[in-house]
Image (cartoon, rainbow, N blue to C red):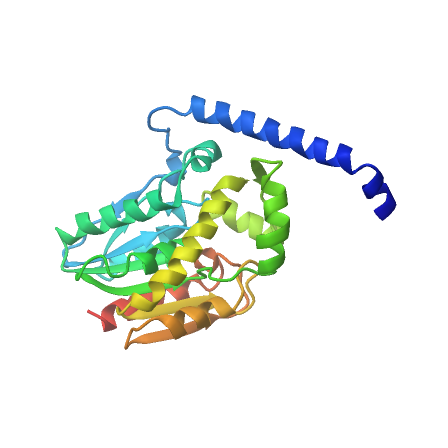
Length: 290
């Protein structure tokens, strides 16, 4: 095998160069096609539930997903007199092509804009971030004195097989492809994401690179977080390394910080069988930190 690679290395490099050029040309035409606002899928629409109280939960959805995953939590919080704002993050809810041209700082700027808008209307803001929504919550935690607490749900700092994927497989793959179809670790996981959430079934690899930049920015911002923090993660997450939660808890400067481990469940445990338990813990956190 090694002899074959040495003998034909020029052809292998040439093939990779052709594939990379094709990828670049294809991405050029993708950018040319994207003009104006995209049409939002009805199932992925943002929503707001206004209650009489002066407290609001800002719900930030995950990477390639949408606010739909928060519907049950939103109804539960509203029943307990907590207003809810679940925005749709840039590049989401429309098409993977639009996500492919979105930069990580656009997500941050958009969340800061949402916080500023809510601060004009509410006295207390609690940010609940699911998966990479938790990264955004931590990055923007100090954006307003009205932010009273942060909840992260399965938020990545380290991924499973992190070094292999980050430094070997991912760099190779993104040089020859623009999109990668999602692979679910079980039929149950696929069913959950179909019934309880609205997600892209294709991941733009350029966007995955932006996600990694967001994770790196999270690491830089965590030491400055002083707001109360609740970290929730599943006991065996197929995507996120369990050290992620411990890292967040050890680096924040919050005087109030805690971690809750959810029993065996899917990465998106917010829509899995322990959702009622997760919802209650989020409500308790909000009520205790007003």
